[in-house]
Amino acid sequence: MDPVLSIKRPAAVETNFDKCLICQSDMPETLAALTLRGLPSFRNAMEQFQDDVYQRLFEQSKDASSFLQKCPMLHRSCRSSYTHKRKLEAVGGKRAKIDFHSPSQEPLVEAGPSQSRVARTK
Image 1 (tube, helix red, strand yellow):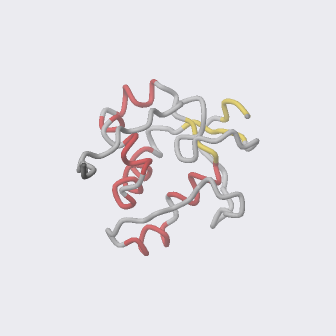
Image 2: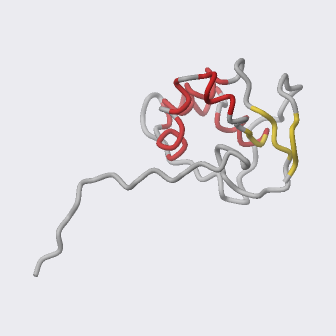
């Protein structure tokens, strides 16, 4: 019997809001809260990359108040790398595959002073 191929997309993986929204890992880096001020650039990056972060969070993030009530957290280096202007320009609307789980990936820029509160460390 021939195998049946499915064109269904795999179910989206649940997001653990106690971990970094982007990498979902237990890196020892401090987590900072995503704020209303930072949400538009985060959503723009998700829309550009159309990656697993987009699959998990884009629809949820449309309602800013309910999304921010979940206390979404990010590593500063993940946020900085994910929303970096040059990286977004390079994507140019094309899909990008970014491996934020790679231990060798360094942030593209140093995180500057942040307006977000630091909530907890892992």
